[in-house]
Length: 76
Image (cartoon, rainbow, N blue to C red; front, side, top):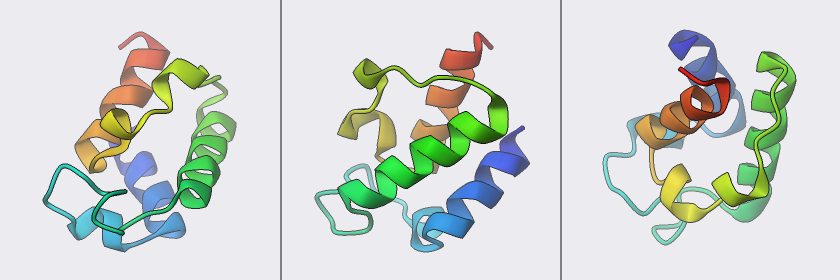
């Protein structure tokens, strides 16, 4: 699963993978449209629905945060 999430992230914006900070949006690594696309791709790939309460900057600060959101939604 982790590898597939990384593949999806790479397809949206490769810079996410090398980002080591904790404020991707504030640092201009991603924008809101990329987050929406990422959420959509993750939902489609894993047949899940990521509730809007999870789609906040804190959960999309870096690659690990994104992986944790998917794991949480999937109950893992």
